[in-house]
Image (tube, rainbow, N blue to C red; front, side, top):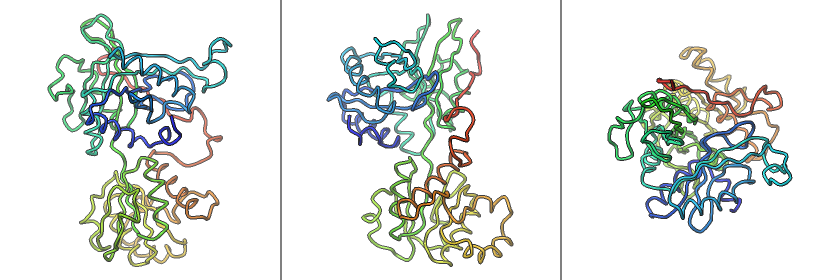
Length: 385
């Protein structure tokens, strides 16, 4: 597979799945369902394999992708799922996976023929709704088979079949972990009791992409929208005073909005799931925009400009907003990376927004205790007996 296909954002992988479903292809979907030890990706990472052997998306840093293409061909030919395990910890010279090519972990991957049973997942994701995808890994002695699927829709608080019917035959205890994982965009394998038999179900939480709204239309906005899109933000560029040719100027943006600073709150859906960067380079526009964002409870407002310029706004803000509201205002915007070129500045800005959206306090990874990726530990509402 090519570098370009390997490094696409998760949002593009999901979109490609939707496109291939529409095209009626014979693709295979590979998903990490379990990791023991260290690995480049965590459970829920996906790779789509088409009939020509091309892959889109990444499972590892590149050491397993070509191997998965071969397994995918077998799955396509047989027409049924296959669960494969790659042990990258063994020190056996006869085993290629033990020759230092991995991440010192054991990775379990489910490969399955892409079918219409996956459409509710991509439709919900594309519509900006969270969804939990439940896939049976081991049905034990029950009537469930590997690859059987159901969905958890948080807005309905219920399990549904791919056809949209009530999944009454699925263990009700799966609803709790499915809701938790869907909201967090995480994945885990859950073991539940079903009529006296233990079944293993992989619960993949697909959280809708976070919205990053960038206010401004200068040349420095372009690199920010590019990096934000590659980091799975749904990007909106907002221009003031009838700016033209914005679609052509910012091709990485998902949406372009032209409005005025005074009507930002009315023309945009702003809430606690919105992240914003204000870089209009106009004092009055910046102040009105920041006021609208703080008033809407936006958790991250990155304001470009020197600290001294912000202090001119501070008096008005102190009279209107509490300290907790002002805590979401980051100015000067960005992480202290020391760079000064447009792309280095954009990297700094998007990195800060990404850290806040992931609930992280930015610091060097060498200073972090424990694993780089947080482990997920959920339990069903009805534990196995």
